[in-house]
Length: 553
Image 1 (cartoon, rainbow, N blue to C red):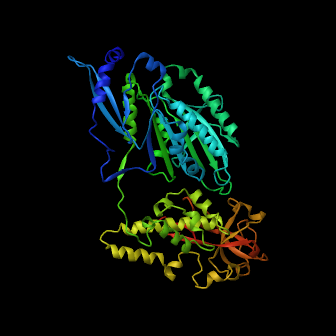
Image 2: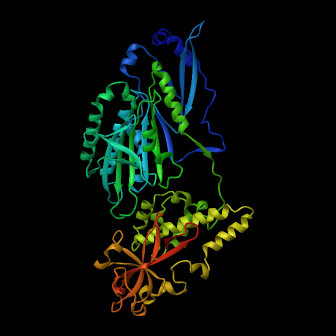
Image 3: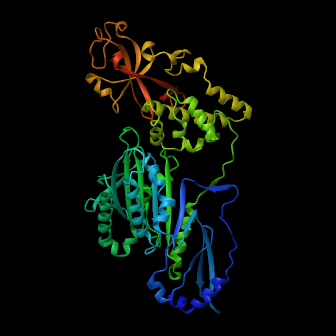
């Protein structure tokens, strides 16, 4: 076929020049839109010198000013001259031969870095046929990531760790540990773990780049990468960000992935397991993904380029276009930025969280998608705000959102009634207040909490050495039951020690529970808390739907 192409270059170029596209825009209907959490792009590399020297023409053409690409395939009929068959594909972003890796990084990958830094999961994967520029693209993007991580532009401090593995068929190898074999397994929570892969702590750009280069060198000199099996080899670089200010928060993750060649269909179940977080609809983590389809423009390789673009277009899963919602005070999904800031200012507790810092540009739905660690970090920039208050405020926002969605979904309820019901939920009655540890008296917030200690109050405290096991991530929580003097002679603490003669209050330990962000009151695990050990009052609220306690504001 290559000789046939070379014999018909002039006719092919004439037919391409006469081609007129039949479509002029993206293929989504007016009722659908693409997933904003997944950006699908394509990069068409320049023609190589040897391809030009052999006389092969270009087979891939980007339409000016669009994200649509036309691929013109030459066909050899039984009789008559050569003819072409054209295919068009649409993606979110299209980059031609003149686009630099820096251009791609600025548009696509750079936003993933602060997202992962803030506690979310960012993933970039590049794929395409062999010699389409995948590895060159990923290598360049990795260097830009290293520059961003170490140039001081990101807010706060993080402990950065990285690992780089290779997937060859159903086998995984650690490229930073002499290519030792590891296992890709799912834990009891359905989270994929790279069992046996070493993580390396990095503190500067040179160290990070040295690890990247070491992994690339080992991968490029591995025998399986020099034969047909090379197209089955995927390289996965995972960078993990641990926030020392929030030790109990989930770590942010950034994946930079060079996928195998797409010119052959192969078993990719291990890869699918590794990338489960991208496509799992039940995932509770905030994920953003960038796909870079690398395309070879040479007509001789048009079949593989068609496969590459076909897969890229398939990843652009259309979603029902969201209809604008009428503003409802108790429905965060309807709030614009001004309405969101107003709600933050009046509902974030004492001291009020700075709405300009928490939501500089986000609307209600966008703030709900913000990773919890990033949400908490922004809250802590307001002077006097504690981690407990920040987490409780995040829970309050989400509880309001869930309650509003539940009310909106009730069948047969008029819109006015739903709105009234949600407004009522936003202003709880005294009886509803008794579902939480909040003091229901109107003047409570004006009295220091140590002057109004009562049964049922929940406090943050600093456990002494004898209760060290109740210190979780540096702090402890307890629910006050009664003064020690009122406990009786048979009362004993969790250690079995009599409490008579001790000073303070007999309390039930409050510990983290199974669900993320939830707490349980351990009524029979009792401790004695002195007044001077109490640091702050905590609002603990009962949630009927989940049957857990959550911190409130």
